[in-house]
Image (cartoon, rainbow, N blue to C red; front, side, top):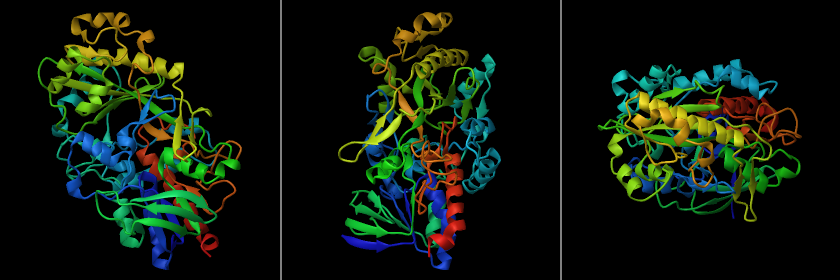
Length: 499
């Protein structure tokens, strides 16, 4: 086993790890040795082919099909230089003041998160797309919402030179999306941070970790040769995501003193709804996610977003099979899509655990309240599709494969709660959060409000697993703001931590 030595090691390079690396990289000028270990590879530009199944296997854990323990929901999260910032659509919202109030954590304020978020919004070129870059799929959603009197807003997105390829979830082939792989990580490396890709961290001990470097078979070679490594560090920052961060800490034995570790995992359970128009619309070409509606966030506990998914993903999200399914899929050019995000509660029994081999297990139960929200959202989406001129709508809990426009007044008859059954309806988890929640003590949380693990002064968490409850929006910028806090605390405590 080879030995390596750093002062600070960061595990993970997504929104949290990338932000932490950049913020800590200023210490390098004072001789502080900082390493970042990323499980996935650093992809070459030529690796972004846009081929759905190929890129899913390259970019996502289990090809984007990680299942919950009861197999009722799939989870998609990436392993790559840049983490999931490589594969998300770039939507960049500041967390709402009301949401932070619902978090109810003393020492975390909306004003603080807002100010920290501004920095990353500026760095990542977040802005509203120009009207001429908004495709039909997005415009129809906006127009349908407005016609019905639903509140609808445009997403600010972190793109630069967007060519409208529509490939955001498969890694932008035009280098337009400004994730951590384009902004924060290169800045950190320029300042002296060493990034080691294709490096899986297996366990953390007392200021030491064990890692394995393997040839990923794609992308740039790792900075280290394949093999096993023991890496010593005075400070360790865990930023491996809401599934892998709790799992790593559990494998390492920290659960014995932290009963909340892995618990309170939360997400936004999601459905894809599809409307069919009589004439082709621009759906693939253009940014896939330009508008959202939080009109029903309070009353129905769900959000609506524009989306456009690829053939395999679309097909698996349709209920049914056979000739009708095939005919529907054969005319992708007619389809309009809406993504529904249910806002769930952070329950202690929804948790990340590990199996006998140390692999993460996501034990998550879809509650009746969450399923109720998804059911109500289907009827709302159907109304939006019809208001936008769709000829037919496919609702996963529909009693028939397609509901025609002339049947729009009979939605309660054709979309029923009893048809919304786990296993029958394809539900995916968006925005994975929690598992290392912040709080005041080790009884109900894993870290303090600065991301420092209770009772372990050299160990930090800096990713979405810190969230005590759901973000109720895309959490990307908020993750960076929380990681910024962790980095600030490390810098403040550097004299005692690094000596």
